[in-house]
Amino acid sequence: MCSESVTDEKHIADLAIKNGYVYTVDEKKSRAEAIAVSGDKIIYVGSNSEIESFIGPETKIIDLNGRMVLPGFIDSHAHPSMAASLVATVILNNLPSLEAYQDAIRAFASANKDKKAIYGNGWDNTLFPPIGPRKEDLDAVISDRPASLMSEDGHAIWVNSKALEICGVTKDTPAPQGGIIEHDPETGEPSGTLREDAMDLIHNVLPPLTVEQIKEGLHAYMEVAAREGITTVHDAMVLVPGHKGSLLGLGWYRENTTAFAALAEENKLTMRVRASIHTSPELGVSQIPALLIECENHKSPLFQIRSAKVFVDGVVEGGTAFLHEPYNHKPGFCGEPIWNPDDLNVMFEALDKEKLQIHVHAIGDAGISMTLDAYECAVKANGKRDSRHQVTHIQVLAPGDFKRFSDMGILGVPQPMWFKKGSNYKELELPYLGRERAEKEYPMKSFMDVGVIMASASDFPVSMPCPPMLGIHGGVNRCEPGVDDPNEILGPEERVSVEEMIASYTINGAFANFLEDETGSLEVGKKADIIVLDQNLLEIPPSEISNTNILMTIFEGKEIYRDK
Ligand SMILES: [Zn+2]
Image (cartoon, rainbow, N blue to C red; front, side, top):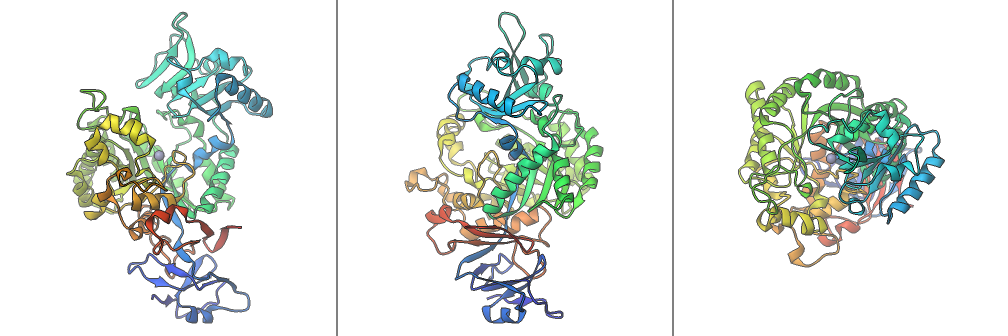
């Protein structure tokens, strides 16, 4: 039993939580029964009898009847600002045909006459081989304003003639490196589909989603997050508003930093947000001054940027992850890194010198090795410091690289809800990687065994919704909820304990975001970020974890969600 309190000046609590199974996630993994909160802080953690002295006539008392209490969850890599695409654009997902798409777009455009550009999401590539959907089919339903609709997988956009015209894309426009402009085979004119980096030709020019639209998306996200017990999130892709480099088609979000700052200013954030700011390979070190200004501009308690985001490779499912050995389905082809290794070394050295944290997307084993090489260059040049650099996704690992993470104090940021043999695994990862590599993908215990700090994450909206409970389930079981066939477990030797998974969503996430003095555990002096669960994760069978619900979420002493 743990018992601690502010002794010299004893407060009367605003809120007293009693009769709980409080798993504090402190250093000693103590359990307690009760928590007292004054304002936004925890002032006592301990027993039912001792909390009585903190209770006054005004104290609100919550009797938990033995329910489990944890620190608020921390999602260490998500894209909350992309929720705007769920509320401010036309959604085509799951519609069956071009005609159904056209009906939805027509209806959305007429209901949104004030929007300067019509954006959308979710069309299915398989309906439009081989050159993608055509501008004429979009012109037929919207011709007065530019329209751009992103495919389900986020790797292509479908645009109308107005968008091509405004953005100056003609049959003579060369595709940027890594991008494709589809053309009509007869006329040679752009046919209406642009892929990969060519999406920037449109999305960096059209009016972006407005600050209001992004705020609307963030409100929707925050509601979902509160329901799932998330009180801190790391947005892994905020943008310098005037960024001139490649943005992977995400230029429509280029006001997202402004939107977060506005919500912070208006006191409307119901969670703590930390963020990484996107960098483009072609701009290299020249973009660092702009990043530093952006970090300096955002220092409010609930919204801060101190980290640079670097994409080192793509994804296995697209054959764009960078591998040491060739893909199984494409002999001789290993994929390519997004950065050239020398440029990456120079960039990391420069970012680290400015004391920026670095948050890397790396998926293939060669991409991860190359990332570690660049981190090594930074350490060599600038010395070892408390940098807390990170690598997220970490799907395919070279066996010698685990130790390099721990030697340099690099953190892993995995998405444990992906630890399973689902359809992605069976249809894409297995044939692309071959059995040996596929079965070893998404290691977790191998990292923890050598002392790497693992801070778990959802990658929302790639995973949607984004419950940490599903991630805890994935980390402990490594199979889909409800599955009990042992052959369906992805790398059983990589399963970790419930306690380790809870830590990865709480105290490790706090450490990853330089917040361990503020949140991540239930201890006196920390912010009162507290959640209540409907079952005790430490007592139920592991297969039941995903059925656990959040009954209450408290952020900085305020109740932001209660299960009705
Ligand atoms: Zn991501």
